[in-house]
Length: 381
Image 1 (cartoon, one colour):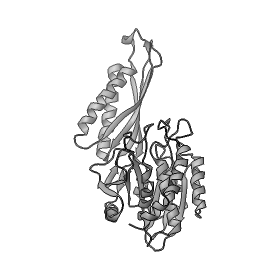
Image 2: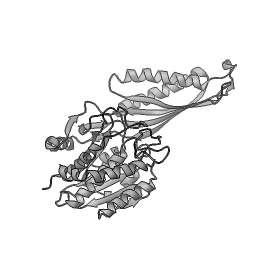
Image 3: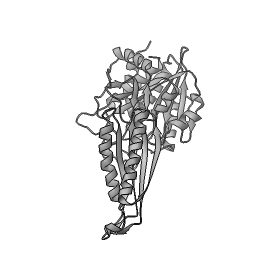
Image 4: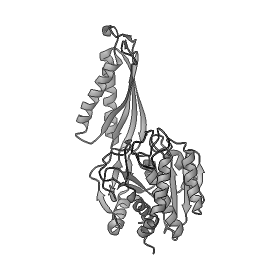
């Protein structure tokens, strides 16, 4: 039996080349025409027959040597609407778009695994999945729905997410809840508006918004004593000049929770805060909650198998003490089949910017290790 880690390491330069080319040409959202085409071409060059669906990803099957459950390996493809500030020689060529979350590494790792699996077939039938729209477009849903390769009853699944601030080459795992559930909210205050010199004549959405922001921070601190959760206001659109009290203002943000009970409690608190702030200011208010991604829940049995398989691997495996408050639509894969997602540390020495930052950087030395992890999963752990 071939040493999969050595096999992946032998293709390190090839994997690196794909990572850098993908990094230079990021696309945001679901419709990633160039990225779909690039991945499909790379798989075809390996002799595979990719299944491609517009705005729904690319899949390919590598037939295994033995029977057993099919293995579904997944990488996400979309970038973020961020202007890159890394200064790298292969930085994004597309203004306002950047692979700041490491999805370029995810794609390159899975392409590396594909090359190795073509050379030496996996134990199990393996489906390679390259999925768009992870960041906020729920791209897992159309990907799972549209691909014939994914119409599977008996399968298990595995995915990797790189982490820009954890030690490079270290695998972080956790049975059960691995990542939080995430929802989005919008609070809109409306009133008559007024001259800035007459604040007693009209409620001010800015004042109401400030009350909500401060109240939410206090409420989260109280709720989090029982179970960790997050509520973050990320956008405030209120007013556009210095001498007018605006007639409308809105806040947007995200809620991250680990259980349905805490989610319900947090949504209730948010609505109550908004309604009280509006009443105090004499404004009307609407609160919109957009249900986001479910939690990423790893199968405990699969996690045990993974940890056992990593005992003799060239990586260190560490358990996570608590779930990550990041959200990920890989959750939909894990709702369909048992499996796990892991974090792969990829910190560049001297850099502490986390994923999504304009200066986020990832250690390319982990690329072959990521490919090796996929190969381990394809061989059934």
